[in-house]
Image (tube, rainbow, N blue to C red; front, side, top):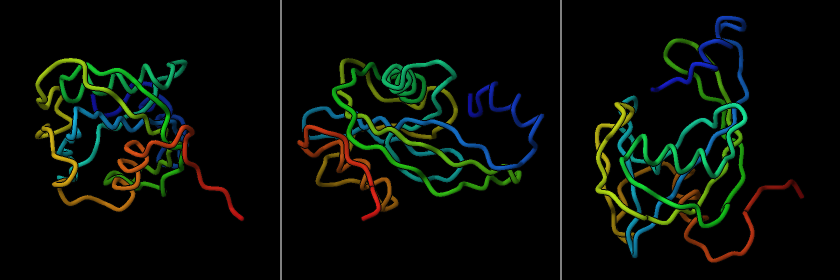
Length: 157
């Protein structure tokens, strides 16, 4: 499902006004490879991303999204980055901005496949041969790959 029911319900009340949502980016690592999906809406290669459901634990959301989108069973290893996305304006005029929690995930089982229609492809990429992607997505992946004990975040000096 591309847009969660709770978001559709909110949209009936607020129209296209900006909506603040919580989201996860799941960077699934298997040895020296990372799982990437090709988004059906933009064609961009990204790690698995998704909206956290109301009351859902963020790490649980990351596991759920990976299974729903790529048919991969994964386990969270650590919170790697906390950030805020730029505002996204969708083709229908809806506007959203996301508090994004990046998790490093460990592959447990499964072969990547686009499982829910949100993506047209899902596959492993060698860390030294990642596809073209936005700088923001590269930063998310790098944060997950770094061995820092705490999550990265931005704070104005």
